[in-house]
Length: 199
Ligand code: G3H
Image (cartoon, rainbow, N blue to C red):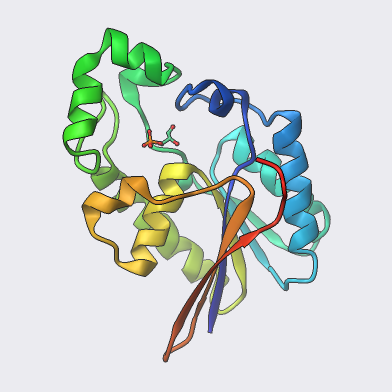
């Protein structure tokens, strides 16, 4: 049996403003979401906590780890958010105005579109798959949580759900719900669990 929790980092100022990438910390709402996530998972026997190398992922995992001093914590670059290259740190509205070819390219095929000097979802899939393999190897049968990012979690879910590639960039990844994935040789169970009445 493999039991895996998949959470997205809490709210940041970048999320509020529609700014992509970067390394922003959580807002007060984001910190409250992190506390609510930890409280909700309090009774779950999570032994491994995987994050990206980004501040927002660390800050979201901190309350979980504080409650579980015996848990293993690992930060994987493989779980860092999709790299937007020349568009890192820009507002979506700025990209639309200053680099319309990016918006057009993404609108035409968001899965295969590669940001200038950055990544596509197709490329991202390869590194996320590498990260997942490493995480599952380390955790073995022990329950684990990955505190990822929107694009990362889309790809992770698609690896379990085998979604069509073109649908992957549109999977719903809220910041106040986590996915619980439980795999046995006979069945796969996916639940989306709300842990916070907030955003
Ligand atoms: O900053 C990246 C976003 O979380 C990914 O979202 O691919 O829908 O723009 P997007």
